[in-house]
Amino acid sequence: MATYIVLLGPPGVGKGTQARILSETKKLAHISSGDLFRENLKNQTELGKLAKSFMDKGELVPDDVTIAMIKDRLSRPDCEAGAILDGFPRTPAQADALEAMLKNFSGSVDAVPYITAAESILIERASGRWTCRAQGHIYHEKFNPPQKDGVCDIDGSEVYQREDDKVETVTKRIRVYLEQTMPLVEYYRKAGKLIEVDGTRQVEQVTKTLFDALKE
Ligand code: ADP
Ligand code: ADP
Image (tube, rainbow, N blue to C red; front, side):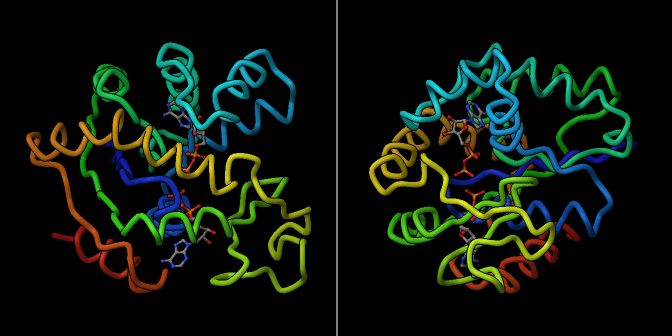
């Protein structure tokens, strides 16, 4: 049966970084809702234009279009064995929709690692984040800089600072997270799927905690 893992946690905590590692190790597709929106933005699709108006303000894109986008992504062949979901679901309505979608593939959410860190750490991480233009590879100006300034180590494309990674927008996104996404912690705890992971330490240590927790 397919395996579906949802990474839950506030903006900047390290979900994308860990999702990439998990996806490579477990040979599961990595689905990042933020990356999908940014891809649409780059290709100037209608969805991209709509999403931009919310993303720039640090607000959530409406549930209906977000759910439709993920449904489409999950039905592609590379998700046959399952997926690591990064940044989706972010509201209870999205979580309900996800369960309904996965039923169609005779699956369900298997585990929900919930990565946490203090707000000051989130702001430091998100506001120093650099993102690769071509494929969304993630860097940090201090904690994980690319070897050559402004150039992605992996695909050689430009590395840029996301418009919504300015301190004011990051602060707003954390507030939106607390209001709209935090209810999912109880949602998945009640379902017996939540695994709390301390995201404070270095990437390798967080990865180890995450893998150990998933083994249990
Ligand atoms: P999220 O997807 O949760 O927003 P990211 O994985 O994009 O978070 O990480 C946010 C920023 O923090 C990036 O610049 C990344 O390089 C950096 N980062 C991620 N995990 C750690 C960590 N454990 N220690 C220090 N920096 C980290
Ligand atoms: P982060 O890595 O910091 O958590 P993301 O790249 O996941 O940020 O998301 C960036 C923006 O994309 C969000 O602020 C929001 O506007 C939009 N977005 C991403 N995922 C969702 C979602 N599941 N529901 C609604 N909006 C989303």
